[in-house]
Image 1 (cartoon, rainbow, N blue to C red):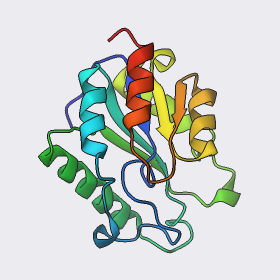
Image 2 (image 1 turned 30 degrees about the vertical axis):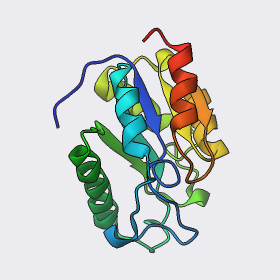
Image 3 (image 1 turned 120 degrees about the vertical axis):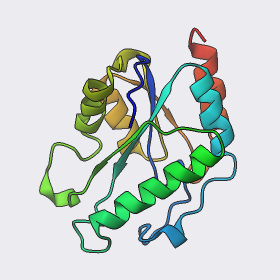
Length: 169
């Protein structure tokens, strides 16, 4: 994957923000349904000069509900589907641990955002975390990012408009 040296990013939760969430975990590519206008607003956010990076808790791995290889296949599938719509996700980061593991990478802890910022040269202060859960927003705040919470399985339209009005784009 080619590095993008833009210094600001939109960090996005995966399930419920990019693709429709499930109460029973997303366990296969067949269960992935992109939110209807997600590509439109991800492209618009990219056009504002943001790299797009997914930050996701995937405790289904630790719970034995989905294999890590399948999570990687799902991420690749989402990336491919969005790329076909002229939208590029620069990288996917996820926590595979159980919520009770007290690991340092599970949102609301900021470790995955911090790691992505190191890997991609991202300025966290000028970046945003968008997600549908309070843990997404807390992770963003804990990393020093701006944040915007959307409705579960909702459009990114409001987030785009909010960010557009608050950035020098």
